[in-house]
Length: 244
Length: 287
Image (cartoon, rainbow over all chains, first blue to last red; front, side):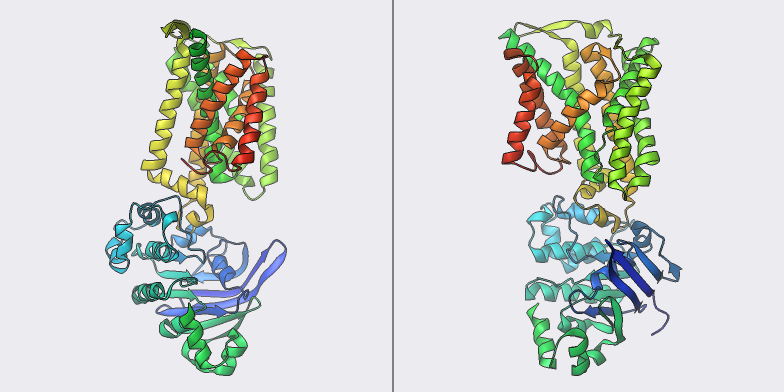
């Protein structure tokens, strides 16, 4: 891997006296998709929130060469990060158009790209986001990250969780398009999607980095996949991915 | 009939005062999770600044502007100096606002005495007009008009401006607003300034309504401001507008047609009944 865009070292997070992360190391390549994997409760979402400064953290988080520990969340994000949170983070009382407008940072937001990928968002611009389906809300969440041409990294936390297969395909296409322009850090349980999109992967276990390397290599290694991700045969890996 | 009209307009005037107090309280709590017990102090600052300016030949409109400006500055100073350093310590934050809420009336008493000071009501606002046979004080209309202007301005601000959009989003999910790269602290200061301006305006108009200002006026109005906020739904300006009309009218009619003081009790009973049926208040959301 060439010099990473995001370089996390010994990231520790303690919330309410409970140690969630014990020292996570993570590199995100300057191009393509890097997957962050692990069983439920391994610390994936906390790692992402730690990178963004949404939880108190210690350690080192270098983004584009600059140390960001000590910065506030908005300062970190304004350096060019788009974030799709696990719960989608859509403002349900606002309309679709207002949700998108709130995320505008560039003088010339890329509405053409967002509407090309998700034409529904244009049709439903005046609809209250709380009345959208889960899939449509996810389109709003991903659309917000694609609006800013100045973004240098997209972080997507389980973007296909709980979505119908048709929507998963749309989300995968959108992430693929995003990854052509900016690096993506993808937290995902859907291993079929990981196999399709990610070149590299980092696996967490019990709040620590347990593995880092090429994604295809890990997913091809049945024993290692079973140990690290709790999946067995390769067939299981694919089937599990297809379920989401 | 004339009594009913007079009570109705007076109730609306009182409701207008409650709305001016409650709108800021509601926005501040909705966005920042801050129970601002110092809000009554901001009202008192506005009341005394307006009274001082009106007593020094400023003329009422200019005095009201001066009072509102002083209240706004006091609110900004409060947010920057006391609330902001305590954002991650909510208990200390409550204690600090309670402290300011107690200290300011004490300070006003120390400077101008504990007795009520007569408010120099301008002649044009001291008279009455006839409405369906009732002689209604002109100042009631001024209060209702001011509350309507503030309501309209708030709705335009929240619905049509980017700052308003940030505030509405922040009321829902503050962390997500920051995760979009927005400095939500600026919105905090802005909301505090707006709340302080409305409270200080209420202070100046309370002088007009009651004919005097005194150091405890802010604390008394704050109690009903909180009742209106809870009834309207925390963070909902529209809910607060509806609740203040109901509270003002019920209070006036109950006080007149039953024993004096029963109006306040009726409001508390009404609040309890509403919370049993709708725990999130009338709307439970932002206007």
